[in-house]
Amino acid sequence: MATASPTPVLPISNPQTTTTTIAATTTDTQQTITGVGPTPALRSFINRVSETVQGGLSNRRPWAELVDRSAFAKPESVSDATLRIRKNYSYFRTNYLSLLAVVLAFSLITNPFSLILLTGLLAAWLFLYLFRPSDPPLVLFGRQFSERETLGVLIVSTVVVIFLTSVGSVLVSALMIGLAIVCTHAAFRVPEDLFLDDQESPATGFLSFLAGAAPTSGPAAVSARV
Image (tube, rainbow, N blue to C red; front, side, top):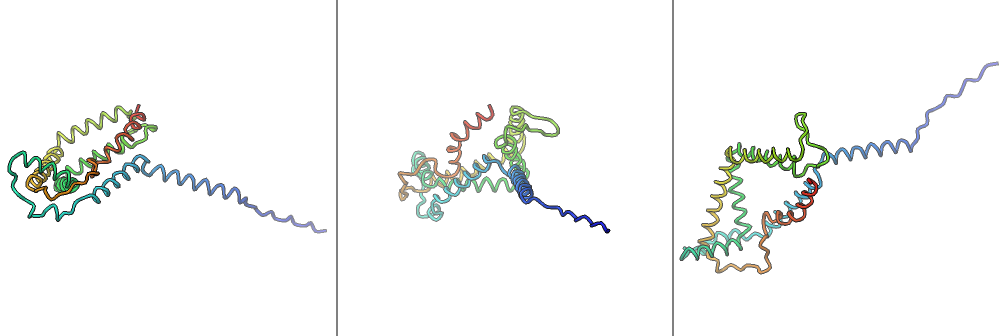
C-alpha cells in the first residue's frame, strides 16, 4: 500500500509583526532625520530674525521721500544739525539701517577673505556653543572639550579674527562710511514735513529681536550652561 506524501507546510506571515516592524523603522528614520536637522532653539532664532526683518521692511518709509531734493537745506548751526539727525533717524530708522546693511555687505563682498573668516566665526559660535545641546560633549580631533574650554577657544578665536586680521578694519571702515552717509543725509534733510507716529516703539526695525530675545532666551541659556 502506497504511503501518502506529507502535505507541505506553507509559511504564514504575521501581519501584526510586519506592521510593527514597518512602524519601528519609520520611527527610527524620523528620529534620525530629526537629530540631523536644526535644533528647536536655532529654528526659533531663525524664525524670530525672519519675522523681525519682514516687520522692519514693512515699516520703512518710501525711498522717494528719503531722496526728495526739495527737502534739503543747509543747517543753520550744529545744534540745528543735531536736532535734524535725531528727528530724521526717528522717522527714517529702517531706511538708515538698510543703508548701513548695504554698505557693510558691499564691504564684505569686496573683501572675500574677511567674509569667509567672519562667516566661519559666526558659524562656530552658533553651532559649537549657542545652539548646541549641552548633553553630548563636544569632541574634535579625538579630544573632548568642556563648556568652559569651548567658550575660551571661541573668545580667543574672536579676538584673533577681529583684531589680528583684516576683518576688524573692514567692519570699522564700513560702519564709519555708513554712519557718515546717514549723518550727512539726516543733517541736511529738513524734517518739518515729517509726521512721526506717537505709537511707534523706539525698538521698531532691524535688530529689535535682540531686545525680545534677551529676557526669554538669556535665563534659559544661562541655566542650561550652569
